Amino acid sequence: MDISLIETLRWEPDAGFVRLERHLARLAGSAAALGLSGAEGAQDALIAALPPSALPGISPLRIRLELFADGRIDVQTAPFTPLAPDTTWRLKIATTRLASADPLLRHKTSRRAAYTAARAEFPTTEAEEVILLNERGELCEGTITSLFLEEGSSILKTPPLSSGLLAGVLRQELLETGKAVERALRPEDLAHGTIFVGNSLRGLIRGSLA
Image (cartoon, rainbow, N blue to C red; front, side, top):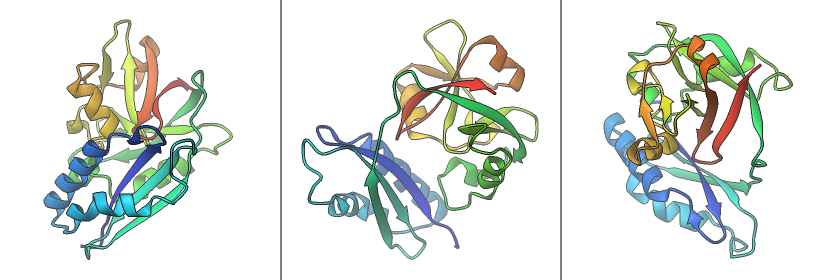
């Protein structure tokens, strides 16, 4: 199969790999579903890729792991700068659509043509993130984030996997801890609450339709 699996993690000097067990579990589940081998070596590969300077007092790191169809694992590290707490990302809605029945959408793979096309619809000077819909006009996710809506309560709403989207690590954590629930959402719903986008690397980010 001409496909690879990707996990993007944050490493903190004091906490180590953020949500490591969840990332490893998603990788293993996706590898089993798609018939890829080698996921069991992911944790050792991550540890081996940490530079000698990755010690307490050093800045956080963005770590990208890729598991290839032949079982090979590649890990890339780069400095990571967190966003300011009051950051708001400008959001646009793409004309590019996702197919809700596509099972690959639930896995973070190298097949990203739809996300690349959606991102290309708007220059980065106009939007930090672009949201995709499915063929029914339901909201799915951003090109690199999960989507959430807060409608006056402390519980976030997020589109269900059946709409056609990635089982995001941060998204799953919020669902399992009761901080979010699944609900089918449409673009008009975004006018009636506070929008957030997020992923495991950056956490939740407030969004505004631009």
